[in-house]
Image (tube, rainbow, N blue to C red; front, side):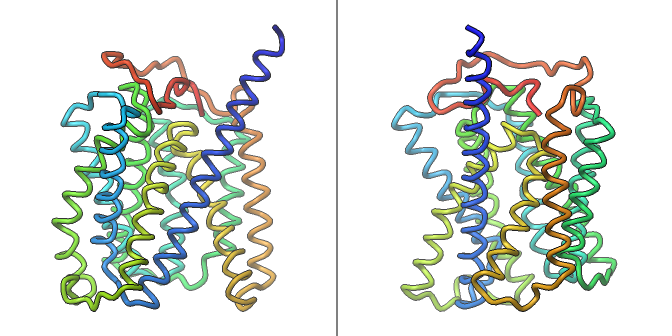
Length: 337
């Protein structure tokens, strides 16, 4: 009987690793496809493309519900509305921030999401971090900053866009974990509620926003077989990216997802050097990668130790009015960090 807890821990570790690999593969895949789509084929309509991603995700959730894999569940409209507002501000803010800021400042803004996510967890979830966990996060931030931050020029409108992007992204990621816990929703269930609302709002706003950002109209784009195939491929991979984000945040919480997310930054850099030549691969980039990876390993050890990261006698009220089944993996969410 003593083997049971170990095998359960092993199973959880295996599922965590699978969820994480799923997220890495789909995230890196979509970056490569979207780079090709935008740089090679000139499809620079990022917001509209994201709307198409969520429309495809909605189609998947409809099919899964029809097949009986997604059980009926309830998400109150005010919570859904708040989530969609945060998520859409996050998407639009990131697109605008990338356009108005230097790459260096954009990267610094992305790095600042970890402290913001920590702040949200401390204030809203009463999470307490050990000294080692805090220091390991600083090491991760330092390593990724050394790798990715080059020119850092700041302007007022760029700073405002980055500020909105960082806070809305952190709130959206916090909310994914919060809603899954509060309403006992699995990743598929939550996507079933949020994807249609995001698809509708982004497809309505996207073309106008993209025209404002790029001065090009999405309906005037010269569509051909290859570019349409790339758009379809991007939408297909995006289904996996959206789903894996929800699964990962459900399993890890927003801060751990952010720390793991910087591993993707390192992987994208390594793959870039591997596929597109060695230019840009210098000593300080390699040094930054090593520092970041050490920080990530340290964070993994520190946050999993007793007292490394724990909730202070504050239990979130859960609504159990619906029995979740099918493909729900939120059964062991509480207390998971």
